[in-house]
Image (cartoon, rainbow, N blue to C red; front, side, top):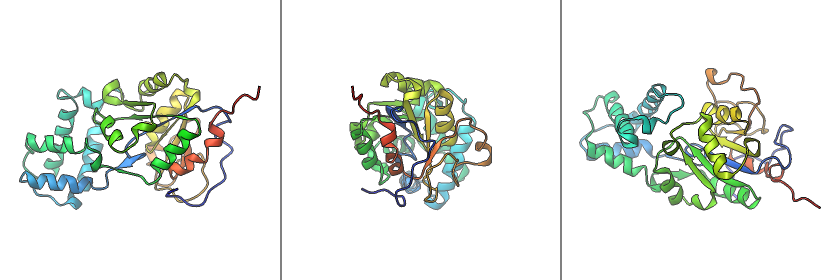
Length: 278
């Protein structure tokens, strides 16, 4: 089984108690899959529409624009449906801003449509090597699984194309619910679909604020998936490289931190309720 992590480690004492957790919800991008060719895909599409920028120049601008537009977003309501043009309108503005910072002409609506549709296809994305084995093992262990993500309506098609839909009991994304993580209402929507209380579920994701703070605030167990973390014991710290200074504030209950989804499998014996011997 592909793991992407070091040798098997001892589980921490602060792992969830035996029989407590009945489901795990997952973030999508950065947790289950990634877009390693994002800058290349943007560059190729730009060139087809008469705009020229090297992937090396696009990558840092993409990150800067994401941060910029995230800072302008209401901290709770979904950014995509809040835009007058919906998800396509939001991403259209995103692509326009990328072009502005690269000092390129304004992108055409055809370029915007091409990129929007391109990232709604599974072949724009790549699963982490541990994703399928981990989901299969957790599912076989009796856990219910779901995705909770700040995404738009393309997410379900991407999950299906990547072969993940068959493992999932629910898919909850912000543009359908109207709220973004870390707002408790998007987590509550997932728990409602699973028919579980917060204490019966864990949430795993790569973002300290959206995933960890959001889950802990509702009373869920939180698992920070820090793929940059050096091999070491699973613990309750934020982990090297996982959060900036402003994000490392007191969270109250501390999250579990894993370097891969394979490490999450190591918790399965403590997560799954044992049958009542009587």
